[in-house]
Image 1: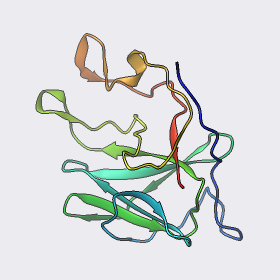
Image 2: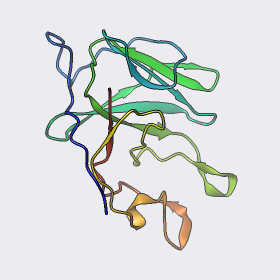
Image 3: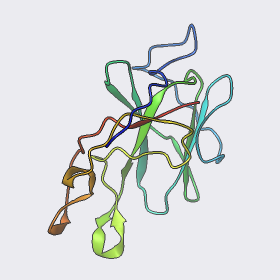
Length: 154
């Protein structure tokens, strides 16, 4: 059974620009995850194989805005959103190679949870749609899962 936590919807600092057009700066390598510093949010994601990483922001109606992390240093993709505050719902999409036999499963159709998130909102139905491939056809990538689970910046 899926549980839900109602910890807030997408929020920008008071007086900031619309969530549909967030500003993104290069940012720092760490800490990993999305961390609100009282002014904006630092984002850093580790991936040895990613060709691009998008942070996906969600408004009160569940509409998604994608912002590509602008910097890649070593194996860390990073950026800083100066207008993004606590309570923002988000996830990540990773672009890169799809080769399950080699353990490579980059699939930007999948919204990924942040393993460093401080809170998670929404539910998950554990069925075939959650997996990166079709059952019985591991080499065929799968699209979106039926999930409304997202992290909440805290």
